[in-house]
Image 1 (spheres, rainbow, N blue to C red):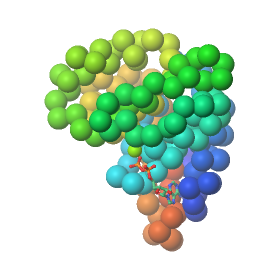
Image 2 (image 1 turned 135 degrees about the horizontal axis):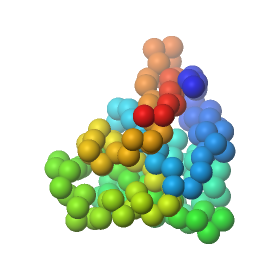
Image 3 (image 1 turned 180 degrees about the vertical axis):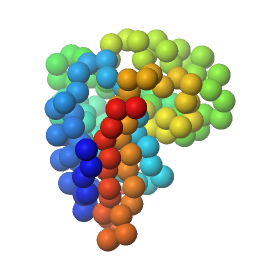
Image 4 (image 1 turned 90 degrees about the vertical axis):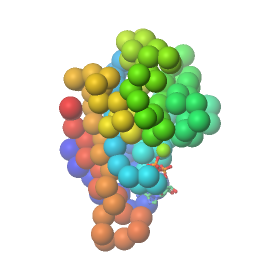
Length: 141
Ligand code: ADP
Ligand code: MG
């Protein structure tokens, strides 16, 4: 599935449509350059699940934990600052992945050996047509 969005609002809208297809326990990898819209896409998913917490890149903490309206937990990771996958042992990353909660992972390329085979992959690219245009691809790993 592929979609071109022309602004942040359209990306939020597409993320909500995507979120409607998710089940608890799904792992979603969000790839793309800095500032392309991975966190915006995450916000859209969280809006769909009526998360009332503030959704921001967890750059200093690696993981943010949100509560959906249903009571379910959503984990949001940003692996940008991970230099060595062993750092994930300390935070017990496997336990998050196996918790049955929805897990959203920015910069999955930093932790390739931890990414489950059945993850969903969302890739966001800039489109040449305008500064705010993005090409968003969704696929199973
Ligand atoms: P990332 O998490 O990938 O580093 P962010 O989601 O934090 O990036 O930031 C994306 C930035 O790009 C935001 O400032 C947002 O307003 C802007 N933006 C412009 N056009 C779009 C678009 N089509 N989709 C998503 N974000 C967009
Ligand atoms: Mg981000």
